Image 1 (cartoon, rainbow, N blue to C red):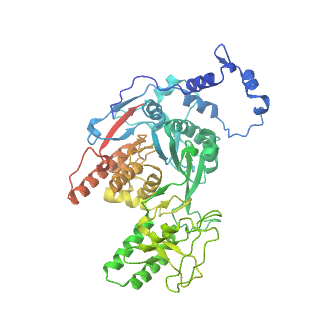
Image 2: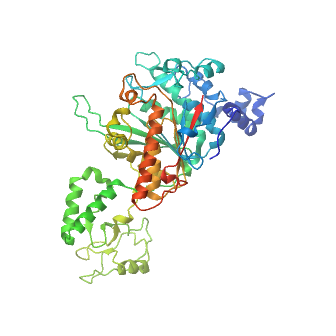
Image 3: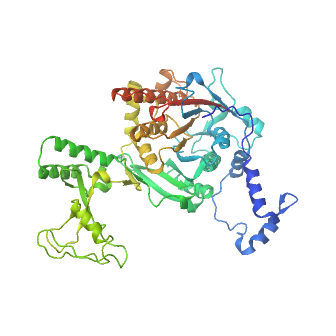
Length: 533
């Protein structure tokens, strides 16, 4: 990736929208200005929503948030060679800077180029660390001056730029929405037509976030709200909360496949590992099958839609699929003789979905499952190794895994960052949605879980995915474990995490007897850039 040393202003978003409207409906403009009445006439009055009757999300400061969005920036991304790993060959990017300014700069090089965006923004609980720009109405010159409010050692001063949002604030939800709107709007511009965005949240802002995303990306591009069951809450409350949410939208939902599938599945790996353990013990097939069924019962919550895979043979764990049925009347009609009684077996009501030649081929390969007698319809043997997991609306994963991931890298320093997301959670999402060359963006990078997930997923499947992670150099709390360990801000923690992941992956490559290819992103090559906002 070429070095970025831009001194030009970022794209004029409002100007581009006006230009598109002018090219589409030139009769709605008079002397270069929008004529609202002419626009209404062109569209037809019955297609225009009257004032006061529009269904919309609004809040105090929304207009100012749009002004912040539309203001171009002349901010520059400055390469930091001394803080990078393999600067010249690295394909990943970590950017230290204020994410709104960074996003505006990225538009020039990455417009409609990103396949997957994951963000974990502040949940706005009133007691979390959500900090926001304290003024939206100021002039651009004042804004740029303020966001350059750095201490002598280069640390962004929180009081000069941000202040904490509290429930006592008269604009508690408004402040959060005003912070999110411009960032999500530009994130939309960065998405490819087939791109998707996942946003973590809890019930504090789930309702407002859904409305906001409908406005920015369109309700027709809403995909799902994923419930992440991440904890068991036994506190004495009216309803014990044991989940968070992940909101998912597509840039253009119609361009997405019918279903996302992934060969990477934790439940699949667990079941495969157990089968191998039992087989290595020298057990008989009936004994292995009994062990697999006991394992499924003991780990029922984790198995998801693999609970049907409770049969085994010498090859693998398998299930019997009823996909022999044709979905509509008019399927193939032929007799299947039971392998013991020799009598014709019961047929699917709509006929078979494949011809007799296909059946005979599968039968010869041992893939046809017969019932005890001819009264059952045949099934097809589906091996666990061929299972492709689909992304489901409920994910069960212990939230503490994120801290365990961090501890494996930082040892006794695991308290440096509170509540990081599990690497496996982000890896799962990326594995469903991306291909092996996708570009991944996280502009609320925190401790850089997303960066680690991309690198480890590349190692697993040999992919060449790239990430861009952006994190504000927010000062760590006074007297915190992070400060005592020598970290000045959260960006430093994220950057150090990526270094340690790179080292860990390199060491694993050597252990496997291979050489470390520094030009391949699966070996954690890293390009760190700093954004001067």
